[in-house]
Length: 370
Image 1: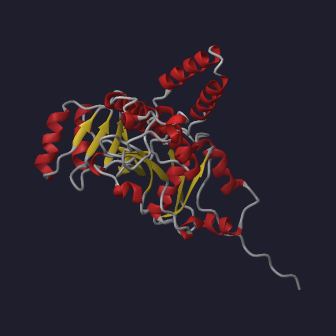
Image 2 (image 1 turned 180 degrees about the horizontal axis):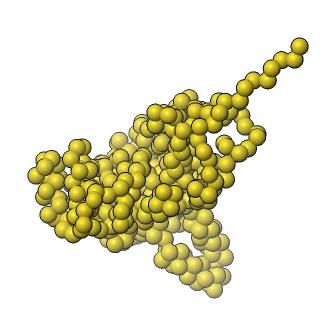
Image 3 (image 1 turned 60 degrees about the horizontal axis):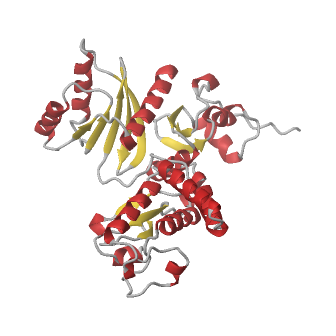
């Protein structure tokens, strides 16, 4: 007597490939109650999601999960680096039961920290770890963090590049005489006064520019130095500069989905009838939502009405938006209603502008999807 083949469970989510973009991003798979049961990332969201619903080659875990999927939400990002970092944070936030990463003791990504000392140093830093060098440094409240970086090796390479390129000190206390690092042209010799405090501050600012990805001018400067060394037949130094240029050009892709921020932020992109919301908790993108605006004749009144309702409970420290009639008046109204000060920003450039453009990108996808 033949054994009856196991019945296939029905698929409850109607996957339409054209409803999903080919952009990089993360996806959240939800059950019938709207609970996130799986979070993943993809270089190409459309292709990756097709695997779950169209491919015949699936792992057992995937076959068990797919029938429990009732909805799929995607969050678009700018590059693969952002998708990896965002996926990590989404898994930690939602703790989906089908994510095997839950078994890993993930303590976060590596950072670089600039100390708040009189003559600052660059040190390695990692969230939730014991950072002894950082804890022993002075002026921690004035310190500044850069990152995150995807792994310790890359972080260390970038940190060493910044230290050696700009001759920053690594000693805990300034010695009376220069060490071997000065003779190897890896330190500026601040301890013996070969550079002035003002010149050292300038070098620190250049290192900050590099670590903040504003390195176009630095590359130009390094290329000019390389040409000068080559013309002077200092080929060893020219080769050293060439290697530095190569490392900078292969620098980690810029990412904005995780930063070191002290307050929560809401990114709001308002269209004619809907608004896209990205929630950022202490610098980490964690949630996204697409909402229909209140029925108001005046578009600016609809913006104000949505923001007021949004901030009625647990308002964030800052709202980054694309349109507003009177930000000062709205800030005062929110404070009057909640007793909490909320800053409203309409950015023209910088990271906040990049975040707003990312929100716009997600808005356009959600509006197209319907």
